[in-house]
Image (cartoon, rainbow, N blue to C red; front, side, top):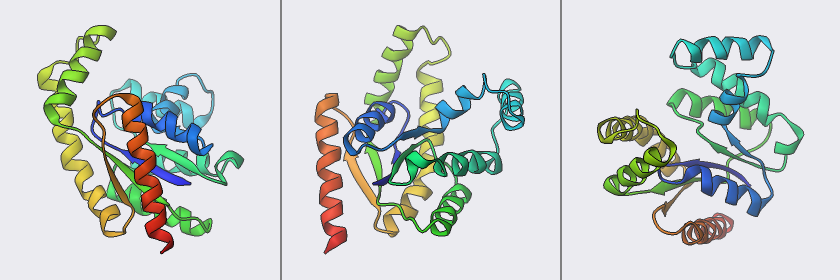
Length: 194
């Protein structure tokens, strides 16, 4: 299975990504994790990413695309993968599509975890209190959710029009959400084979 997982901050993408990857025996690839790991790597690209992140800048599409393509070229991704946190822009969608076409692969599905804004805000405020994240308050969380909605909706529309979007209610107990995701993916796969 070649999958993407998308959803607003606090929808449980990271948790569900790990469960999906385990279920389908594919690597879960988080661009956030890759960027964090680069803090300790000593390569020209890692040094470049580190400088950008330390200055508070945004890692460009060009660099992000190269990092993802490099990761997808690894042997463990040949039979499948789950991308979390990528693509985030229409240019990244096009680059991913082009790369997959060049390597004779296609996406099987794009999972979109749906979550009520107020529920997500409450969840993130609780997590911020537990983790001591003083910069996560109601206002900053709502801004992040607004940015996600504005920047991601066009991507979801692309995948919806391509028949790849699988929308799943992301709220509830972790096991419940996982069961919904697996059932929705199986139903999607059956529709694709008809």
